[in-house]
Figure 1 (spheres, rainbow, N blue to C red):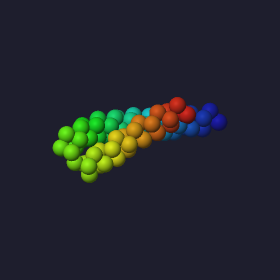
Figure 2 (figure 1 turned 135 degrees about the horizontal axis):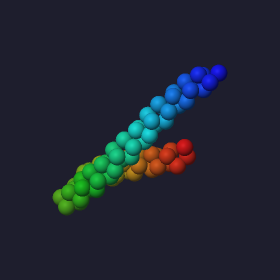
Figure 3 (figure 1 turned 180 degrees about the vertical axis):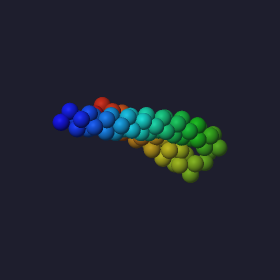
Figure 4 (figure 1 turned 90 degrees about the horizontal axis):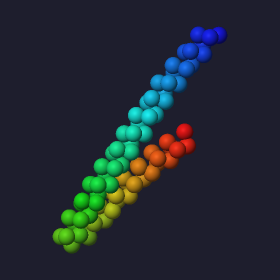
Length: 77
């Protein structure tokens, strides 16, 4: 019985480690998308390119969603 508990604990530890890595990776990618979208928006605004501004806003929103979801899942678990 004790061996079964140890085996279950090792599986849950591996899953927890994987979850932690994925959440950290998602948060980092979201932060990069936020910065990239901000720079892209500034450049499009300077050139008065409306299509570029819209695409940059989508990048910023996608980055914000990634960062927000990572933070939410981290807080809930």
